Every structure is written in structure tokens, then in C-alpha cells.
Amino acid sequence: MWILHRYLRWRLRRAFHCILKRGNFEQLEDSSLYPLVLFSTHSSWWDGFFLEALFDAYAMEYYVMMEEKNLAKFPYFQKVGVFGVDLESESGKASSLLYASRLLRGGRDCRRTLLIFPHGRLVLPDEAPPPFQPGLEALLKIMRQGHAVPVSLDTWFTKYPLPVASIALGEAIPVETNPTTEILSQALDQCREAHPPVDPGTADAFLLPPKQNFHGQT
Image 1 (cartoon, rainbow, N blue to C red):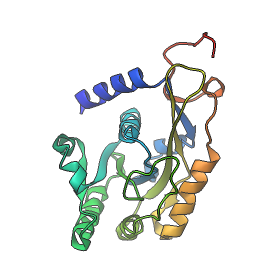
Image 2 (image 1 turned 45 degrees about the horizontal axis):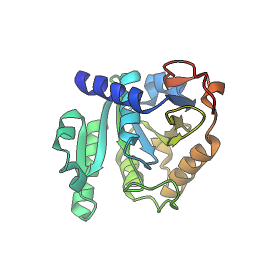
Image 3 (image 1 turned 60 degrees about the vertical axis):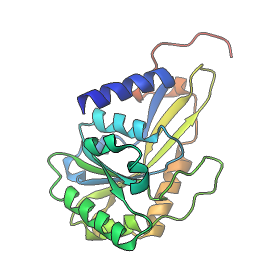
Image 4 (image 1 turned 60 degrees about the horizontal axis):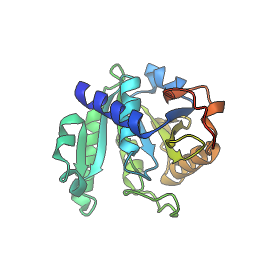
């Protein structure tokens, strides 16, 4: 894990000008929030790297649900908290949800966190998002405690030579409220709409700060 996080930080530093933190990050310091399910947009290959940096920065004990056929192409990920779900099999989906609920049980003290991409696949920025897969709602129903937090990931170009990335967090949704797929989908849409691209020069919170000030011409 130590090697993974150092490698990812090196890759992110070389590829991005900075990574902005937007929304309520203070809630991640509250132990009563955990166990935690982060449900996120997924529009680029870099998304997992962004969230790995988040897990490292906030000392989370994390797990990631990935489609089984994609995980088979990258078996190394199984050593760093990633497990598979067979989206083409009802029994496969059910067993993965039960496994995820067991992983999250009793995870308050260690900040145990699960990342799930509820659309079930990568959705390009210019593509209309498909409906959520039913797995997220089903998982929250069988959890006994904890919260779900929407996460919006974004990248864009500005005057800087490298693109800017952003991680935006919405407000935590208690598991006890039995949120429906519609409520969860609306929460993710609201998180994305509340945090459009901005000039990082106006930002004051970074997961990965700019390496240096940029003084060139656009």
C-alpha cells in the first residue's frame, strides 16, 4: 500500500496541475460517519487514482468494487483492496453485495470505506449518464449503520500547461433513512451541478496543491 500511494502521487503530480477539494471534506474527520460508502461519477481512467489519493490523505481503510471482467485484466488490484462483481449474473451481484456489507461491518474506528461507481461503467463527459445499477440501494439496505456520500470527479483545462482535477463531496446520507436509487441519483447530480469547473487560482483547498505558481501567458 505504501508503494502504491507513493507511485500514484508521483503519477498525479506529473499529469495534473493540481487536484481541488470542493464541498464538505470536514465530514470525513467525523468518526460517526463511518462505515462509509462513496458513490462516484466515473468518466476517466484517472478516477481511481484521484480517489486513492483521497483514501491516503484521510487514512481510510478502503475497498473498491470493480467489474469482475475488468479486474481480471489487472489482478494486482486485488492486493490493494479491490474486489470483483459479476454484473452479468444476478447471483454474482448478490454475493458481491453481501461480501461488501461484511467488509463494512464494524468499520467506524478504522474509517472503513467502500467505493462504488453506481452507473456500472465508465460514462464519458459528453454522454448522458445511464440509470444507476440497483446494487447501491440494495447494499445500503443491508448495512446496519453508516453513511453514503456522493462524489463528483472532474478534469478540465485552463491557462496552465497541465489539466486541473477536482474531487467534490456532497452531504452524507444516513443509511438508516433507506435512501432510494432516485434519491441517491439526485444527490450525485446535485453534487456535480454545485461544483462546475473553476480557475484553481481562486481555490483554497487542495488534495494535491499546485507545484508552483504559473506566470506564463495563455
